[in-house]
Image (cartoon, rainbow, N blue to C red; front, side, top):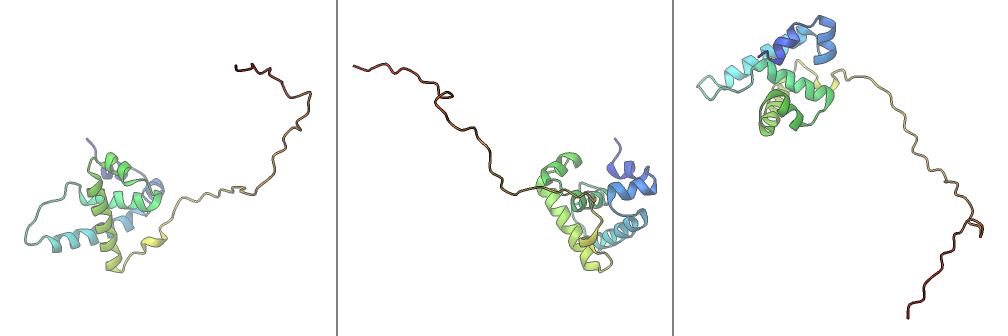
Length: 141
């Protein structure tokens, strides 16, 4: 089964940036930064992560770009919600602490939506005797 990263690599540069949120070159710089941090953190050993570093980065970038629920990301990547939360937190913190990336200004899909929320009175028909239906009450003994 093909991973998300393998699918993304098959995209051309324009579609890669549209779907992932960064250019391929930026993605690979981020990936190198994360790999170095992971190796430094686990040089004495430790349990390997279930997701590849590439999928961890794609998951985080997807979260930052589209803001899906973590439950949906857990379903898409086949991991638990706690794993999604830990992964996103670790990747964000690592990339921010490197000082090379500004995650607050990733390009979000641009869409302008205008919603009219002003109050307006509702016109209701006047109650007249001709419109009122009279129902005969039965007397209760």
